[in-house]
Length: 204
Image (cartoon, rainbow, N blue to C red; front, side, top):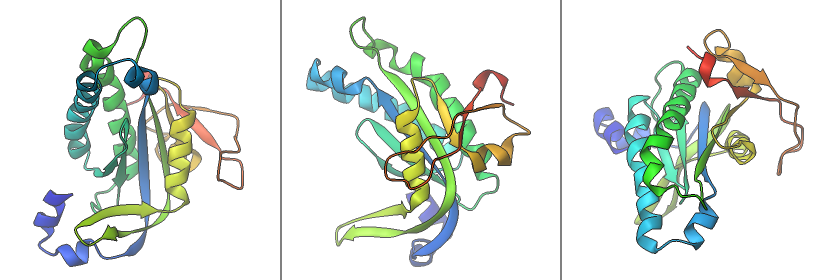
């Protein structure tokens, strides 16, 4: 986020509260609780740092805005601070790159008892954007149903899966292949969510 602020030359305007349609990506490690309970602190933090270290440059490459780290996960925004076009495709390509790099970058932390995996959820919708917190600790955040949907889809995703909301899939179905899933009523949401699973081996 800092690079975008510097490039804009107007931090106040860039971070001002606004409503905007954005794409949100949630990524979360699978099996991490058991892994953390049975390993030394250095191994646990080493695994997290390895995950963040390879995912971070990919976020920048695909012009995403890292909203925050979630311990064993992360949240990335598209079309928030950075208004580059085609946010749906950029989010999906980031998801594919993060998933493809997961095994080689996390290999040394895998063992026969605890296998770490990764699930990803992506959603699109209108959110309230701006800084929240208190003096000395302000974070840029997206608040709205779109973030909740992405989070719930991430929770639903199995290891290696990327699940996307219907409006994301429809926008880029000419470039990526999806499998429609049975609508689900997800926690905290009033209506069933229509969503799709990305087929990484048939994406373009």
